[in-house]
Image (cartoon, rainbow, N blue to C red; front, top):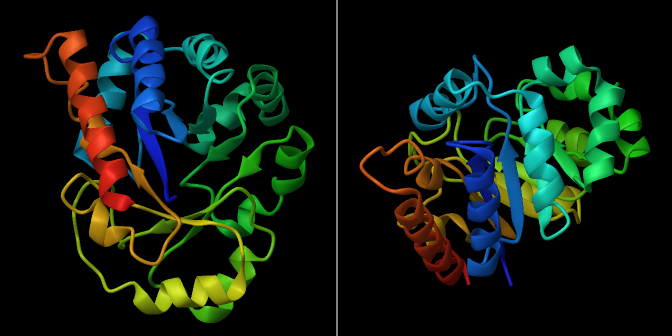
Length: 245
């Protein structure tokens, strides 16, 4: 059974909604939740997630909100934090990882932390039972893939194309997927540009998919009520889970 990782922006529009949405997504088929930490300069994200981060920050998001929703979600489903290095560094890496362990957060995705720098943090993340997820790009050579994946844990985040989330670029990933599979047994999940229309094709040859913009775009749709947002997103979860399996 191929896995579905679902990304949502924390605390948008509020903490209670995030908890309700996450638990409904689990019931609909999400295996792992990627709980996004709103940040003012999300360099790897496209306009959909960037807008969601901005709105959450304008609404007054603070890390205490992330902690509050995590405490209510993580006991019920596998939960990761996805954020940029600035909040981790500003709060204190060990301090924030201690919080993550307290709530049961199992991993972190930090897209602006290059592999060379991430190596210096691997040990401290492992100390708190928190997997620092490794990224592989379609432009990576076989030698670099071997280097990146040698100590990977939980899963490898395969970036579907060079660019930002949600832009829907298509690239032939057959060779890079083959290279990754030769180098490691760690599960391989693909992200960037995955939605209900592309999931079936994107899932070929990998162990799971990561979906973000397709869900998050509904969070900032002011024409929808909160219950309508949950209904639409959970319908998409069911559809994508069916498509990839």
